[in-house]
Length: 183
Image (tube, rainbow, N blue to C red):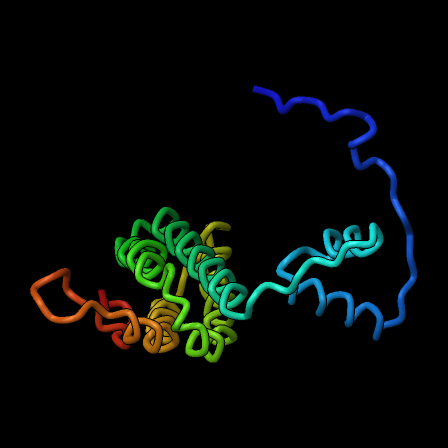
């Protein structure tokens, strides 16, 4: 079903070209990031005389983590589809399912997550690059796979340990440092 048409008065069809200094642009981007909105949303609100309230750091950190984990899981699923290797599927289910579920609403973990977010983003880029190669039909080197999964495990380990289920005979906890054989 098609999306309903917007009233012509509400449709955003007009543009505003605006030159900013690098410092002004940096400040605008920073303010938008702190508010947790896009640059365009922040600029539009500011021009209309409204300023979006900055979202609490813990909310921004948790949103960023969930985005990173979902992106990594998507790329791991693509790797499984492209290669047929179930190891990628197991990692995707852990990262995008179990780990996401465990960190959701755990705002007390924000400082730990903030400390590790850059590394999580970095390994996300590694997994993305590998998925891109596989999706183009290029052969993946076994050492690259092992190294990437090992780094993924090491980077996620602090978060994994912080949300680890306590005791019992629940699902087997993955050994995240073990690369391909971790899950």
